[in-house]
Image 1 (cartoon, helix red, strand yellow):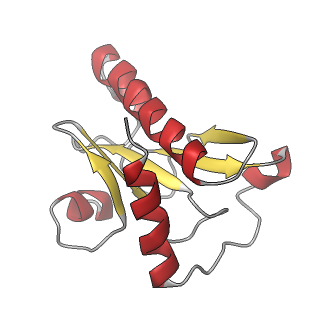
Image 2: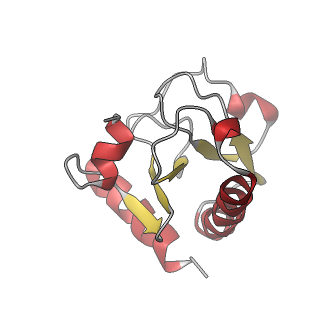
Amino acid sequence: MTIFSRIIAGEIPCYKIVEDDRFFAFLDINPLSKGHTLVIPKLEEDYIFHLDDNMLSAMILFSKKVALAIEKSIPCLRIGVAVIGLEVPHAHIHLIPINREADMNFKNPKLKVPEEEMNDISDKIRKNIV
């Protein structure tokens, strides 16, 4: 069972944004920027391109809904999208508020955001989900 499956199961706490029957979105605890969110399928699949076409397209549409809520909640020019897939063996999409391309560099230092602020950010994004 991956760490992400354990988050979905409620075994590990997270800053949940939204979930439905197939997907789950939560704040990255090691964000590149405030509001950096991960979108994962509830199905435990290691590689995003091993998802069937219907699941992959539904994951993109779910991510769009989350990205639009992040954009309303966090001052930024865009929401950057990244799929790397090596950090955790569970398919996931990074949604990262950015103001320049360099903000997407995963070698940048990760932010240390206090718990109270992470709660505030997740609440704000959650309220903007349409």
